[in-house]
Length: 321
Image: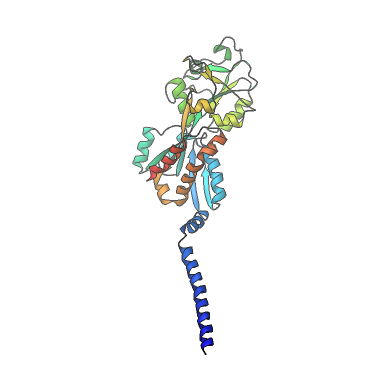
């Protein structure tokens, strides 16, 4: 009888051990929120709407592509309507994020306030706005800011290359540049013509930099301007000019070092503007912006722009607290 009692006790003891292990396992599963959070994020759904600068678009598209690899159920739409076009939609709440190659204007900020749009400005990199000619052009390697002003100012009468310098050929210059909604247009005109938006208007204009690339590449006596990254993507089709700002430092060509140090005369910041309501109420927007700040430095370098410091990417997220 005593042996049976001992056997029964051992069975009960073993059963207690098994039940304890199962119970502890269940408790441990409940105590690991990270797996639950990871699952939720992987299943992240919804759409992020981005529009604006054609200069910033390649970076936003690259971030969106990497984001999609992790969050396959999320959707990121990146439009290219120019910085001004993006802000027109942003300040009335049509989009979540506005790509911008210039800072938002006071008039645009006032519109946002009137429409109840609160936003965060996140600086995500630097660009050297680049002046291009056809690669068959063998007579010019550098232009001064004064020469660019003579060429691009409102009412300019310069139509042939030899009107810039007598040593240049007597050939008609065909000009290519961004449209008036572009932040590139605004920045270039402010630096070159001392007034944002002041420009001659008899040139081929497009908000799509790829159109400008094709135009310059197909015309031996062309000249145009757009962001540095588009030059890097099309180096075989274009020739970039150096810029002399006549301060005694001579001709400076855009590259990562000259842009990072802002020695290059036409260096500018790049931004994304984020609707705070979207960030706080749409998990997909919040995760996309966080992902953007965590990956921008690597991706922007691959594209051809210059990243800001790591601390700035981190501090950008503090603007939502």
